[in-house]
Length: 118
Image (tube, rainbow, N blue to C red; front, side, top):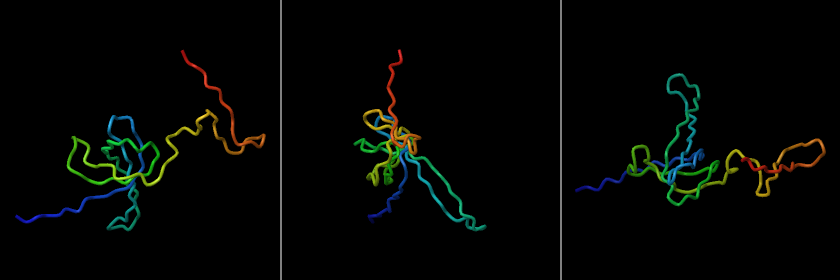
């Protein structure tokens, strides 16, 4: 038999969801030229990626690689995290201080007290 080596597809994108157990959702942006009209078109696609180790968080830039189908929707694995993101939409640090640019009093942080909702 002849051994066929297949080229594995490697993509890079941004993690948009980590809410599943061992799966993350990665948004891959492509910017390509239309073959006939020459206009540059941005296309986006979301891939479900197997991430057993759980290193990636929302907002991180990651590289993914194709693999055999793991489930109905998952056919990519997490290769590595290229750069850490902001960690989601929250702009607070570990002490609950909200970072705001250009406050009127000249400081760059605003204290917010966390209230318990019952």
